[in-house]
Amino acid sequence: MKKRHVLVDYREPEDIKLILRSRFNVEETKLEVGDFVVGDTVVERKTVKDLWNSIVDRRIFAQLRDLSHFKSVLVVEGTPAYWRDLAQVKAVYSIMLVSNLSFRVPVISVLSRREILGLLEALSGLTDKENSERPVRKLKRETMDDVLENILVQIPGIGIKSAQVILRRNKTLCKVFSNPDLSGLSKRARTGLLNVLNYEYKR
Picture (spheres, rainbow, N blue to C red):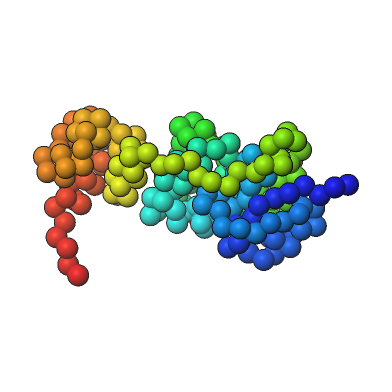
């Protein structure tokens, strides 16, 4: 049986690449989005620890936006027991719902790296022949609206929805950072933005 082709980000662990070589022709490259590309599908792999860290530092929103430009899947590797308290569980499942419902990026949980092989094989079987010979390589060009949203979601308390509300009401970052209209925002989002605007640099 002819092996299918998979693009793998060169920064992925060697044991994953070794597992994939048993069933795929692996091409290592630098991927701007995701960790694997099978046909026309981009796959982002996160361990449970990676996912939690990306939630804490809010990188997850920019990553989901990038993934949403493609047919893509977010794969979470590891046991949910890593999230030890109710607050963590709530935050993780909230992000999973946002990924599925707002960004249209499905989330699939796997327990082991061996299961990732099975997932990629399933994807390769669903990918039509024409697209499988021409895998996705480049990220869709980011718009200025994306840039403005990405800046605001770095602020603690502000997610993508709050960023969009702020920008729709204020139009420019100059207005946001000088005399913002904060109506329609949650208390958490208002507090997060005002804390940043009034913070004095200490370094």
